[in-house]
Image 1: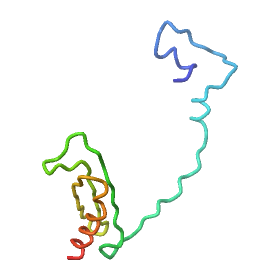
Image 2: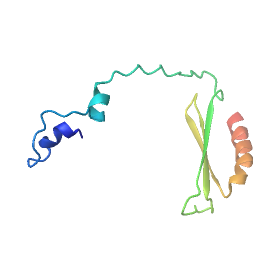
Image 3: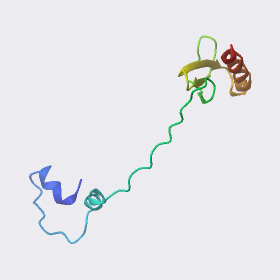
Length: 105
């Protein structure tokens, strides 16, 4: 909050008419910003063209199958998620192979 506007919050603070310094909030709010560059939108027309993946974990509570980590693959043409539970991070190559085989079917 700007020093010049503190009187609006608390009635016991007097209104400050003239201040020698410029508040960074006031300066930044009056600044003009450059327009953001347009987002690049990748149009996928073929399934399997763009696939995102992410590994999460370790989870505090293990799953029923004793998985401590999870991996998610998302195919962007159909937005189909493929989710797997991993016991260790070193199991990732095996589940990547499994995803590729399941995706081809």
